Image (cartoon, rainbow, N blue to C red; front, side):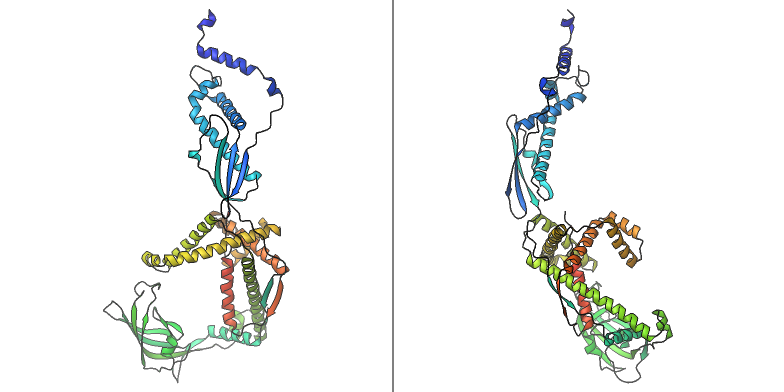
Length: 495
């Protein structure tokens, strides 16, 4: 009679307890190994793989059983104590939600295992269409996805790379020019007693500017104008200003017209024609200062001979830096020319977008309107794509070289380089590192340090030939700076 009064739920609970109390013989033995997925990998384009995975039924069943076992321990079902509800009621109550959770877990585990087991060096996450994949009621679960991978390529010969270096040669003429420049920096503008305007002179003049579209003329009194090839009259840039003014005398008036560039930073002059009238009132030349005790003291030397030695050491250091920059540029060019690899399209597109955004922002900062920048967008896009391809290609090449040569960067090395940069900028190293960690540039900085170590290693075995320095030393230095900047731009962070 007592049994007849029991509720159906209580009978179910007791039956569940009896079943749980039993320990099947199979569970006493070691659990069977995890069923393996069936994985197929195919080429799907440049740096792209198609991965097809079949999750066998045995694995799906085990995942379902495990999920309901865990759910059964925590689920609250009316009429049953916690953890005592039968599975059929759990399936009825939580079936849809649980099935979706099992599916997502299976897909995630299977895709990660396929990538790891097959050693795919992926870029980014797999693109899996989760919504259109359904859990089968029977049989296996098959799905596929595409993923971008690092390019596979062969490095060129890394030993004996041919490079040339400008011969380190500091001449007396170079030192003399530096001393002359020091004297000019401390010089005084002195009225020219006789003669006409010469190159590098300074004139005091009254100027009248007639700006296109503005009726009222702009009159400027007693302004200073430096006589250079490309100079300024007030804020107006004037090409070949030297040809206009050299040979003129005090009291003369010179006239010219200029077309101000559309990219000029001052909006009121941008893209306009400006008629300029210059009335010369005074001519001055820069009288160099005497190399006296005050100048020597300023440079921390006792006499002229010590000053020459100091200048010699400075110029020698500049030439060493220039030579390193020249060889670095040649190493990069060699690697880019000798390495053939396909690039991940998504990575290139993202890098190109980043380059384009920087160029766009720079133009806006120079004073161009969004409409004017828009007119140049096609040209900017072409340039950004080319630059991005080179940056991405350089990154993968240098990354593979670092792996091959077993080159890594320690925290001590990174901190040392940060300290050097911080000292140059007058900042505290700790503060600079904090800022770099916050704005995300520390990873990029580490890559640059590692790349520098790679270049240094390659230069150890490079075949170096010396060449004579160019006659125009100033132009050579300017080119070196440009090359250094170009080399720095080749470092690209990818992940």
